[in-house]
Amino acid sequence: MKAMVMYASDAPMVLEDLDLDSPGPCEVRVRVEAAGVCHSDVHYLTGALPARTPIVLGHEGAGIVDEVGEGVTSCGVGDKVVFTWRPRCGECEFCLSGRPAQCALGGVHGKFNELLRGGTRLSKNGQRYHHLMGDSCFAEQAVVSQESLLKIDEDIPSKIAAIVGCAVITGMGTVLNRIPEAAGKSIAIIGAGGVGLSAVIAAELVGAAQIIVADLVPARLEKARELGATHTIDSSNEDFAARVMDITGGGAHYVLEAIGRQATIRAGFDALRAGGTEIVVGLGALGEELSVPINPLVQGDRRLVGALYGSSNTPLQLPEILRLYRAGRIPLDKLLDRSFPLGEANQAIKHLQSSAVGRPILVP
Image (cartoon, rainbow, N blue to C red; front, side):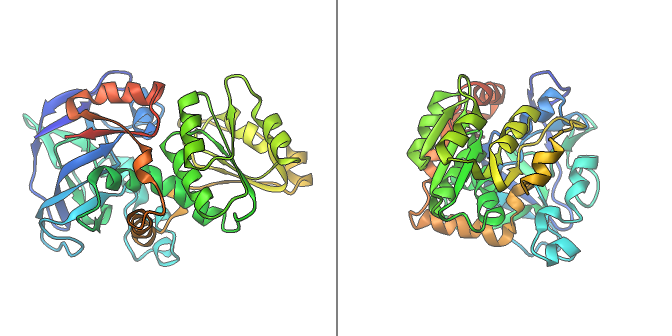
């Protein structure tokens, strides 16, 4: 089984032939049909986020079930599934209250880079290889815990299914879950990658009056306008906060920051009107901190909050998003960028960092 392996940060991934164990109890073997390339993968490749190596990256994917282990109840051989990088136990406080992104199982993958029931299913010449976020879908096949999969209808294109599992559920979910009164309001979005563009789709869907999008790449801003942005800001030569103040006449009701940098989060905070909320979905480097001015925070009654995985109840909302797609209500096809063969994953990463408009896709 071929897979792209990261042996060390700040080094290219290597295409390797790995041995893949059969699925254990409550585990599933999936033939990967598509895998999205996400900036979170870049964080691990650069060392901004730690991981045990060697490790197979990839956490945004879709495929077909080839084999199931004992006790699997959520899917069967031949089913199409989406990988989800936040597992759901269904029993903890967060799952029971509709917030499975905060499930008690969530930290297991990140801490150990193993599957939920311990150990890894990847090896070569007796050496064990690790799993990223329990998925490791930069590969021809993957063994994952059933809690990390959602069964979907077989007629959903695999490339669409893949991006729904991370970029789309994060961007759309944040708007739908954290901005419930968006109709008629102003929403400013910092970063027009896969997550930011998905947020544009959701903001247009729910009737935001002003959808303002900022990025450094003109082609991404053009795509944002195509998807529903009413205004765009070229951050290479325009001041974000000043432009938002000018467009809205006093600041945005909501800012969604999809990059995870101190400077852009602070710019988003400065662009809020009194009573406004900034929602940060972009991840920063491990240990990175943020400061905001106390008096504008208090006197302006502003809020600064985070949202992991769109604060979504994925077993319910991911199928809802796919139903909207099938009904022609949301143009998810327009989020797809170039496709790359598995062995060109490093080129896909470089493309993501430079000129990608939407999500690059690996097709094993």
